Length: 92
Image: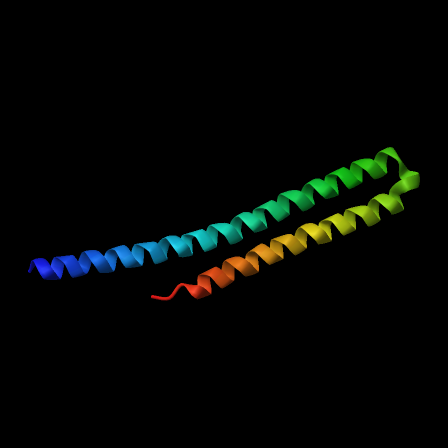
């Protein structure tokens, strides 16, 4: 009976670590998407404010904002892919 209890404790400890890995992968992907949303929102707001203050430079501001948004989105996509790869490496 005690041998059976020890086997159950070992199995629970092994699956708990895998569960934490899945939680970490999910949190990583979620925080990446949240950070990208906040970053792109701030870029859009700042670009709109800059164009309102200096309409003659609106083309340059728009181009820079688009480049920055693409860079942020690229980093978010990279982190989301890494999180999905982490999730795929965890086997039960």
